[in-house]
Length: 242
Image 1 (cartoon, helix red, strand yellow):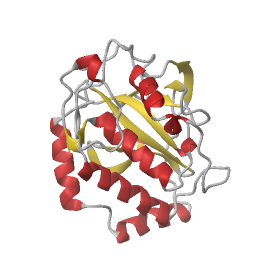
Image 2 (cartoon, rainbow, N blue to C red):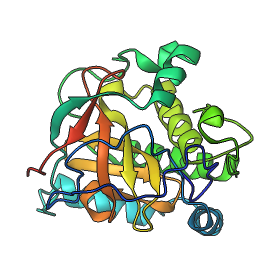
Image 3 (cartoon, rainbow, N blue to C red):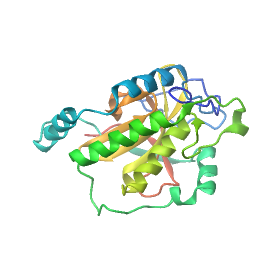
Image 4 (cartoon, rainbow, N blue to C red):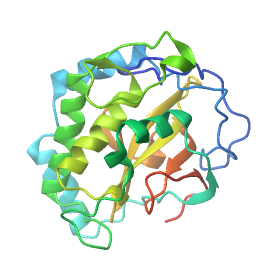
């Protein structure tokens, strides 16, 4: 993964074969293709984030107020399709950080999380802070250098994603709402993001864009994603549902 803060850990760079209508891949990419983490765009995104900062209070209020009033924004939800092997680097991540790969049920109880102004502000703050705190760096070691590290001084998209997930878990968010996902960006490089599952829809935070976006508005093609019930298990992404 190589864009905004990316250490090209695995040299993916190739576009996977077939995709479904919703932009998801028909099958998970093999480990032969490694995360390239788009780099140039990441640097630009970080610069924008540093200048723009998080969403303004007015923007947050308008966004969450719209949902609370039942405005139909047509958000589709991710569908979990076929079980698939987790990325090898994620398996290594679980060995190094075992607590990241267990189920967390802190703070929130059952059901889907509502997108309140407080939660949106928390999400925005963590997204912006991590984008600023990690210096973008490419991994020039290939597969041997593919690591997903929490809060390194410099790193690639993998490190941004696992750090954001870690910080949100520490803030009391449940693991079922914070899912790592492998995607392919328009340039063809593989990239790692965090999907935040809320009652109102599924949103994406990543280091290539300072904004928090609905998952189906990212122009990414979806390869595989963690499952809500088990952080160590992954699945392919099927057709979207309302």
